[in-house]
Length: 246
Image 1 (tube, rainbow, N blue to C red):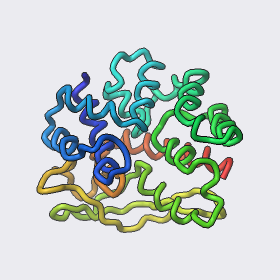
Image 2 (tube, rainbow, N blue to C red):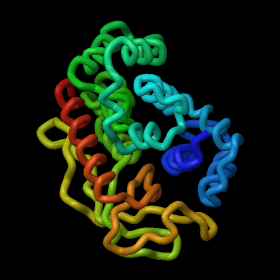
Image 3 (cartoon, rainbow, N blue to C red):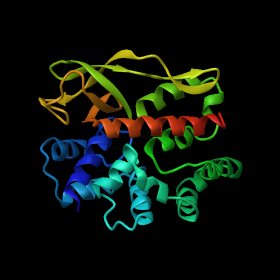
C-alpha cells in the first residue's frame, strides 16, 4: 500500500461518497482515515470498492508497470492529470470501457464512446464526467441544464481562496457553462464550498490566495502551481473532446 496515494484518493473520493453517489456506505470511516492521515489496509479495502474510479487506477497502473494502483502518481494521474495517462491507450483502454460500459449502452452509443479513444481520450476523471457520465446525448434534451449542473459539481475543478471561514471557504471559481451549445468555462464567480466537518478537513491550513481543488463543493487539496496547470490543461482537453460530439 502506498500511504500517500491512498490518502490522496480519499481526498477526492470522499465528497461524492458523503452524498451517497458512489463507493461503499461508510463515508464516516473514509473521512476519519483521511482527516486523521492514518491510512492502513482498511482504507485501501474501502477504496477498492469505488467501482467507478478504482478500475481506472488499475488501468493506469498496469499501463505504466506500477504494481500498486494506489501509488500516488497513479492517483494523481486520474484526479488531476500527469504524464502517466499518455501510456494508457489502445486495446487495454478499449477493453476496460467495453467491459464496464458496453452492457449499459446501446451498440451505437458504445461505438460513439469508443471513438473517443482515437481522438485522444485518457482515463482522467474529467473525461469520465464529460463523456461517459452524460451517456451519449443527455446534453441534447430538455434536461441539459440539470446535466450541466451535475457535471459542474462532479468534475474536479479549482478555485482561488478569497476568504477562509469557520468551516467554509469563499473561492473565486469558473463554472461550467454552455456557450453556443458547447461546454466552456464561464467568468469567475464567488462560490462557497465546505472545508471542514466538526472541525476537521483536508485543507485545514489553507490561506487566502492559494488554489484548492474542488469536488462536489468540497475542498479536496491545496494545489501546487504544477498541479493547477495540469488540472487546467486536462479540463481543457476533455471539454474539447466532449465538444466534438455534443
